[in-house]
Every structure is written in C-alpha cells, then in structure tokens.
Amino acid sequence: MEFDWDEQKAASSLTKHGVSFDYAARVFLDAGRVDLDASRSADGEQRRKVVGMIDERVFALVYTARRGTIRIISARRCNAKEQRQYDTFQP
Image (tube, rainbow, N blue to C red; front, top):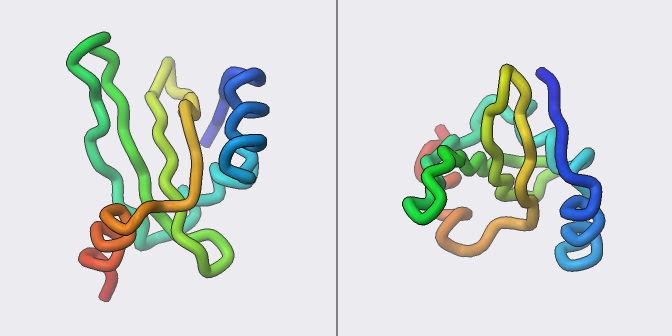
C-alpha cells in the first residue's frame, strides 16, 4: 500500500492534532478498521474516512485514492461518534 500527502498539511496536522501522517497510516493495519464515506458534495472529490486502532488508541484518517495511491488528507484521534462507529463493528 502506497501513501502520499501534502507536506504542509502533514506539518499542520502534527502541530494541531499531535499525530503525524506517517504514524496515522498505520490505521490501515487494523483488521477491525471501519471505512466510511466522507465525500463532500461541494467539490465532488470522493473521500473516505477510516477509523481504526493504533497502539490501543482509536484514530480517524480521511483520505482519497489517487492512481492506486492513498492520499492522506487529515488524521487525528477519533471523536466520540467515531469511537461508537468503531466499537459497533468490533466482535
């Protein structure tokens, strides 16, 4: 799986949310991750949000697929709603 991202956006995420995109990409290693539609009608870009566990903490990562590469748009610790979504799909 290949990842890329805008370096300025990644630096902003690290400052604002305390999580690097490189670290957050590990959410895709969680077999129990939940992948949700996160598209915005305003710009028409198809976005996805994956919610998954990294080191016993749940994170939310928004991305889009471009030419076989996952382009990370944002990453942060999950909020209460995302935690419930994640918990709903766990055994």
